[in-house]
Each structure stands twice: as structure tokens, then as C-alpha cells.
Length: 404
Image (tube, rainbow, N blue to C red; front, side):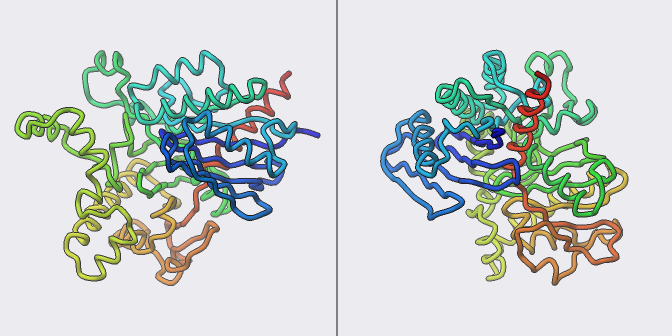
């Protein structure tokens, strides 16, 4: 029997998300989450395709213990890591720098390069590395593949990727715009083309990944030509707790006048800004409830969020020259109809509009929410980053087998 299963691991600093997929039909055999790793209140929730969800609570000391617990849950369903049907393990890695432009089979050299990138992704790459090392120890014989959030954006031209600072300084410290959420932007841009009945290289798409973290991308003929996040995920759109675009001199002002340290400013901009900084909430559902109740602070936060989003739609329209579709995805993009409506309101001269009835419908499938005669289609396309990681992992492993 040809091995057709891929285990996808997304290792965070105190969590592990996982899915086991059968690549013959794209079916999910199991999904789960281990959270609060290292605490007394650790929790593992495991849901097999056939059967009820199971939970276990209690201390899970580290990622090694977490992945062993995951392996036990999978084994209980006959889906153990020792199964000959398991073809590979695919790992989400947030930062691949300029070097990693494609999914990559992990070896010691790859690990060393991911580790070398820690200074530009201090919150993410260390956790990703921990998950990789633990999985390799559990199955040293199995191909392990890194799929990088930044890879999809490496097609950006230098005019979009470079900051306008001294070139020698930028190169010495690897300062450039890398972009993130790349697996989501790749998946959604292709799914949008399919929704339009066209090949990816026939369409230009603006993808709006709107979750607690948010990013936009301009995709021309299947290739990213610009994206809103930069050296780190802080740049760009207003997010749940991140500021997005801001005059960098604000940092100097806070240091000199506010007496704040670099670490304090880092915490402010990444964890205490964005929607939560503006109104105290970062849940769009609660913000909309407050707006509807007449809360002025929530309304201002919503208006700032939409203003920034609309600016990026217009900017990327200019970058692409021709836009075939605008696709909303991720938690807010898929579920918040008022956000979608407000984001394109007033852009009718650009060919953008939403149909109120279509926009109000909720569903799990890609769908158009623009009028039939709209020049630019507006779509809601649920993202599937795990499937994208699994697809890239499986294609790489099967391609390598065919070459041997």
C-alpha cells in the first residue's frame, strides 16, 4: 500500500495544533490541539473523523511530552505514527527568510538555517524548531518537511521587498519585507481562481486574510507581487493586538519622551495595540455588538480598521493594474459580513460591490458575494492552511520518490 497520509504540525510556544490527512481524497482522519504546554492546566483535545472528541487535562511538561501524547491519541484510533501509511510530517515554519522559497525536506543544515533566522522571528521560529526536533526524534526514518509562511511572498520584486534604508545596513542585518500568512494566501488565491472557473495564472487577486493577525496580498497570475506584512508580522493592517503601519519615529518618541524601553515598546505595539488598544476588545463580534449599541470608542476602532483595509485594497488595485477578484478569508474575513460590506463601500467606481443578501449568507464553501454583473468579483474563500501544508509536503515527498 502506498503511503498517503500526512501529519501536519503547527508548534507554537505553548501549543501544538495538528491534523492527520489522507492525501488520496483530502479527508481529515483526525484533528487536535494541545494547549498550555508547561502548565499544570495543560489540555489536549483530539477529534477523530469517526468518533467522539476526547480530552485529557493535566500537566504536559514540554513539546516532547505533547507530541508523545498526540501519538498516543492517534494510536488509539489506529492512526499511530508508526503506521506504514504515514508518508511524511509537514511542519509550519513561520520565517524562512530569502533562502527558503519552496517546501523543504528537513535535515541538519535546514535546521541550522531556521535557527539562524530566530532574530527576525523570535516568537515563532524557536517553537517551530522545538516541534521539528521532537517529531524527528519520534520518527527519525520519516521525511519531515518545512513549509514556510514567507515562501509564497519570495516572488515579490525588489521594488516591493526592499525598505528605503541604507542597502549595506539592510543586507548586513537581513532587513527587508518578507510577508507572512503565505500558506493561506497561496491556498486562497488558487481557490479563488477555481471559483472563477479559471487557472491561477489567468487571474489577478487581492487576498485579505483577516483574523486576529491580518494581512493583504496582491497576487498576479498566481505569484505574489506585494504583501502588507514586512520584516515581522507587525507591519500593515490594523490587527487584533498589533498596530500595523505606523510612523517609525513614534518608537523614538516613546523612548526619549515616554521613557519606555525597547522591550516595553515591543509589547505595546504587538500585544496592546490594534483593536484591543483602541477599544479594549479584539473580538470583532464584540466590537460590532458595541457599535450597534452606540459605543463611540468601538465605532472609532472599527472605522480605523476599515480605513486601513480600504487603503490596502486601493493600493493593491494600483499595483496589479487589473483586478479580477477580492477574496476575504480567515476568521473575520469569513464571518464578519459588516467588515466585508464596509471594506468595499464607496469603491463602486473600481468595479467593487457586494450583494447584501449574498453577503449575509454564512457557509463553509467558497462563494461569490458580489452582484452578477460586478466587474470585479468579491468572494469569501475559507482558508485551509493545514491542507496547503499537507499538499505541499506530499507533493515534495512523492516527487522525491519518483526521482529515485
